[in-house]
Length: 411
Image 1 (cartoon, one colour):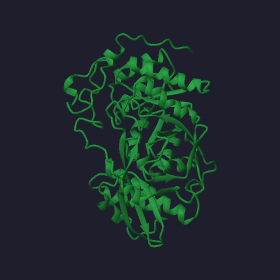
Image 2: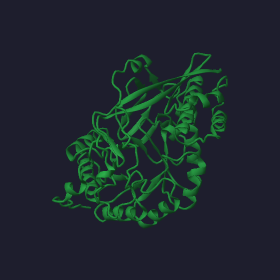
Image 3: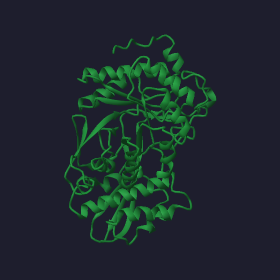
Image 4: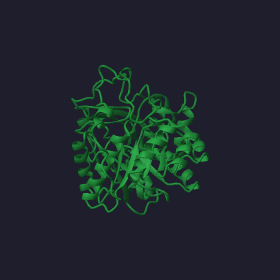
């Protein structure tokens, strides 16, 4: 079997609600999902979900090769990309191609990838992650009730801009999960790198005086090994990070500094990357947790590593034009028996899409705020210069909480 070519598509995820984090919100609830299809001379096609930026410079590394040599081909792609750097979108392209190669290898073996990789149990524990910073309290509760109906008893909220709002929202979701039957709901908070070291300690400390956090995610910049270690030593919650790191060389200083309790990898990094990071984390007696909206490749791989903790579940619906052989039951992903990843891409449906996200706003979402990490207090109002006139304005966090007391928290 030989690789003969590739195709690229871009589909969309329709969230039916605003989604975002401390760096901005997609008010229309539509985000893009790049797709890479890798074709072979035997009629098999592998699917990779992730970037295809710069693919014309990476694909020659695997063209004409046997896709079953996937690990060696992963390293070959990195070598082809090394001069320009394998970080960012190009790393995502390598990861998407790598995932497609694993899909092909498992299809050729006529096995689901989880079994090919050595997994024994097709059930992968999950936590709910609503990308929810743009939701008011009513919408927030409604979103997490839907997760709770599928058995989710752990939830990660987006926050970091206002400690009072974060406390209120965490307590609200805790109560939603408790009402659904969770004896002890597990709560996490994702700051998306918006704090300085001291601000992180103060913000998390204020929350921990009222309720229990399982982990705080990306409290400071992704590369700040000393800062992550300082936060880790100063709060009770575990510190999680790693979704935006590329290559083992970026994880190593964080692990050496003792800055991580939970090692994360993003779905766009690919299966081989996840397996290597999981082995590195295991050598440090640390758990791993995959991140991403459609982390199918990493879900399969998670079944085969000894230190998988829990995987992120964002939208309960697949992207437009994509079907996946998996279910959500009793708070977990349940992988199917279809060969490979179990993904089917309906290319005509994707090509026929008549709804696309609006052009990117230069001020965000996805653009680090000008004053991130430069606020004295977690509830300090961002200056007007930090907001684009064309960007939807967030509610003023101080005004939203000025006349509202933080609810009492019962333990």
